[in-house]
Structure formats: C-alpha cells, structure tokens
Image (cartoon, rainbow, N blue to C red; front, side, top):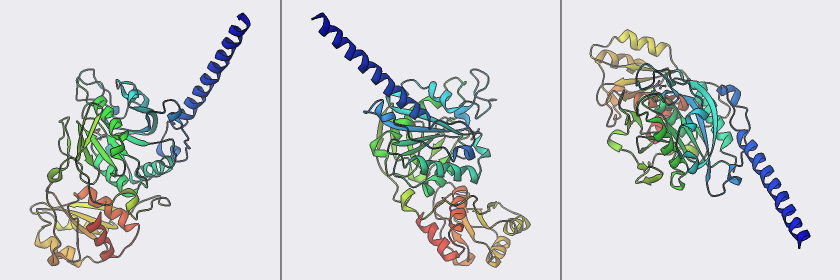
Length: 378
Ligand code: DAS
C-alpha cells in the first residue's frame, strides 16, 4: 500500500514538472513576439506565439505600441504638460486592471513617438508587420496603441493595405497615464475586448474610443481635449463597448483589407502628396508651389469642393499631376464638377485620408481615370 502511494506521488510529481516545463516553453514562445525597438528592426522579427496553449478559452491578442498620449507621462494629476510616447507597451498594459481576463496578451513595441512624427515608412513597416504576424494561427487579433493626432490616418492606411480578416483595433488616450482620470486604461481594455470579439472579424481596421467603435475610413478626431475625442460625423459609430461587452450595430460597405488591390509588400516609400488648404483670398502662388513640388495634390476646398477663380484657372491647367478635391467641411460629400476638370472628387474622404488614398493609388497607376475610380470605391 505504502509502495503504491509512493508510485502515485512520483507520477504526480513527474506530471507537474512536465506541465510546468511546457508552460514555461509556451511563455517563452509568447515573448518572442514582444521585441522592443524601432519599426525597421522589428520588420524582420518572427513570431510564433502559442498563448492559446496557456488558456485555450481565450483569444491571443498582440498589442503593438507606437507611443502617443496613451504612453505619456507628466506631472502627477495634471492633464497638460506631459511627454507622449514615454512608456513602453508592457508598462501601459500593466496598468489595466482585468485585461488579462479578456485575452492572452503579448506586447510588441514598434515605435515610441508622438503620432505627429509618424511617417509613410512607419506605416509601411506597421502594415508589413501585421501582414506577417497575421499569418500565424496562434494570433487572433491586434490592438495598436497610437497618438490621437494622426490615428485616423494610420487606421485608414492600414485598412487599405493589411491582408487579413483578423480584428485590428487602434486606440489612444486624450490624457496621459499620470493624469487624474486618465482615459487610456479603459480605452485599452475596451479595445482588447473588441479585438477579442468574434464579431469584430472582417470589419476592416477599427478604432475604439470612449466606449464607441468606429471604422477606419470614417473615423476622425473631433476634439482637441475631450476624452470622447473621436467621431464619424454623419455616419456615426458602428457599435459600443461596455466593460467587456461588445455590441456591433452596423458596418461599412466600403471595401477594405483583403478586398483592396493595394499590395505594399515590395513598397519602401509612398508618392509625395501634399494638401493645399483653400481659404478666402488664398494665394495662387502657394497652390502653384504645391503643384510643382508634389507627385499629387489634395485641395482642402471650401464647401462642396469650391475654390476661387484664380485657383480654378490654375487647377484646370494642371495636367501633369492628379489633383483631388476634398473639403474643409467635416460632413457631406464633394461632387464631381466638370467646370474644374480634370480634378478628382474625394467623395466624402477628408483631406488627410484623401491624401493617403492618392498615395496608394499612385503606387498602382498614373492614369487619372483609374485614380478617380479608386476614389469612387475606397
Ligand atoms: N501627442 C499627440 C499624439 O501623439 C496627442 C495624443 O496622443 O493624444 O498624437
């Protein structure tokens, strides 16, 4: 009897050692995705995390850090006077109560910048990294922590260029981590809840802010200081998040991700496209300078794509680069206008997003009619 007991104890101990070893190996594999450094360094990183083995009931979500206010610190309690992009992604995740209950989470630091400093090369590296990671069956979705200033631009670039149906959610904060009532932790918690939701798959790149879910094409920053600082104008958000409960109510019919023709795998740079902001009595020399120094141009027009007769004269004479008419107005659509041919209507894309679509269109074609079709479709 005593001998049998010893045998049973020995089996239990060997099994425990085996299970611990397997768990450690799994965690090490998990950490292999979480490299720190710049985008170029990480572009070559490989990832085969198998966090699902740790908790088979939860999704495996990679949180990619890029900086911004959500990673910012300053005087304790104060909202202003902070430095963005200071904390790495692990430090941001650590401050979020209960986040590990939502998913098996792995952090990866790609950038540590204010989003005002993000470049086309950073977008390309980010899209390529997501395309690479998304091929792993061990990864179910992505959250990208990002500064709010250009979040909508990164989101739109990604939704046009990543080739996966797995959820990708951008998130940021209006207040640094050290502020009273910092909004980053709840935003990040809700972004992970959305990325881990089955319903988020196939909806293109999303943004989550202050309990609302937005599509990358429609989302825009709408306030310089409110915590609910994103919106989608006339078209509205597509869902809500309360704690870990995710509710989708609608989705965009615009093609995205796997449905677009944009292949950035061999691209290292994007075309140079500027934005000329029209205003009353605007200098036509400024427009001429922009035309002469870009591969393509977006005009932030007044109202429904309008600008002065001096600017009309200049744009109608411009045949060597495509000119896209967007609007300074947050809502509505810019119509085609034969009087300002050969310009292209940006449809309802704001100038900063029209710029991105023109950059990507120019990577495919220089034909103005083909480019116009991209603006009708995407
Ligand atoms: N510092 C700005 C940025 O990185 C603002 C922010 O994140 O809210 O975009």
